Image (cartoon, rainbow, N blue to C red; front, top):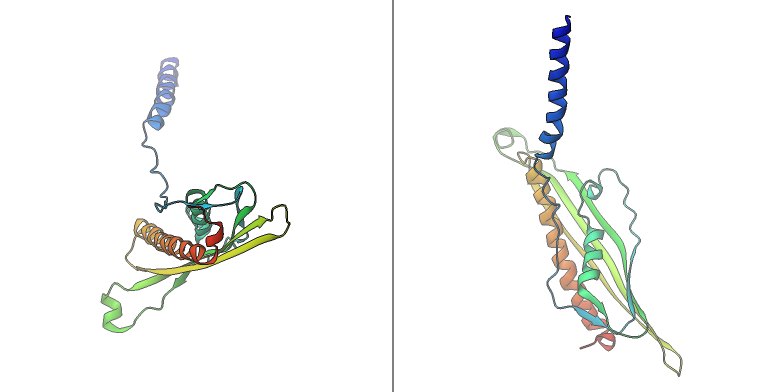
Length: 203
């Protein structure tokens, strides 16, 4: 290679390297991860603090799939506690303990015959479960003693997808399932709190 050719090659390489960061900088940012919120009226509790104790230990392998998504049932429970519970007291603690936050994937059997060959069959079933308990412990006053209340919830649901579904459709099915479970979790636990511990709910 002649000197002129080497200079041209070097100039071309430098130009390419200079263009690369600009091209990367102009790439669109990835879309934000979906989230689920709770719009209900805050539940005011006569406690000094609120804590979340996540005791669910995800296996991190099939058939569980919650570890493959940024949104998980345990995360939903944490967000619920952050947005729906408010501590307005001087003593005591409310603890939301998460015992199950699983999403399990199951492959469905396919039909045979003409219907199975030409039809778009359901091939996957997702089952989500969110189990938790809210325990409120309030120490007694000058006379001693204490009070404790516990409300439990077990919210679950399932969603199926067709074999023709692409990755986006399957991600949407997962999100729709968690949204359904979140609504049930919110409604059931809110009702149970009102039933079990009216003595510690502030107006």
